Image (cartoon, rainbow, N blue to C red; front, side, top):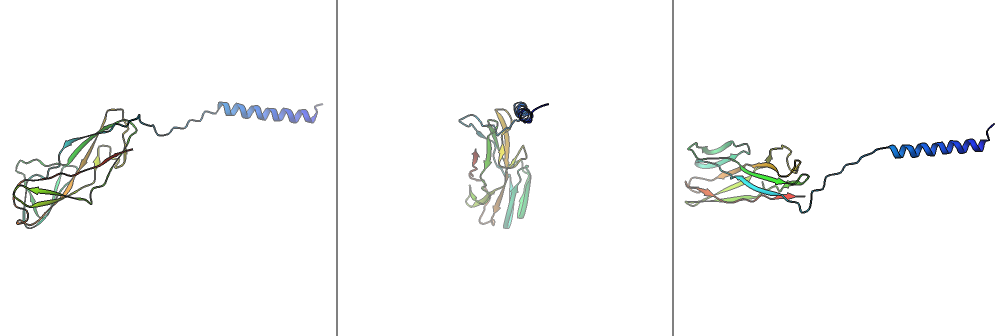
Length: 181
């Protein structure tokens, strides 16, 4: 007959051995975000300028919207013309290291001024960006370096009256901030 102390000791030893076996054989893997090498290298290259093409306008003016997909939409007394002038969205190529997070500062509330060759000025408001990953902003570069992501921007051009905006070429600059994390 067994002593109860021996039985308790054997049962306790069995529980300890089973727990130790379970902990040693339990394979639990935890993955975090991959840290990119330092320094983070992100390159932004202009692949296409923002062009609204040729248009004419009436006495009250209006708007000409360039969509990031490449279409133009006119409003008010503005009429887009197809005279062989190119039009299209601003296109930027971003290349960087896998795992880098990129966000774009929203400049849609900031007006930019375009100056005319014969006087006058137009107001430009930048549109929201669209990328070839359709993930919006912020987005993660998720392919091996050098990975190129295309980001497109459209805009809204506000055109005044014929007296305020005489015919001519209008040009100017705008800024877009790409933030890397």
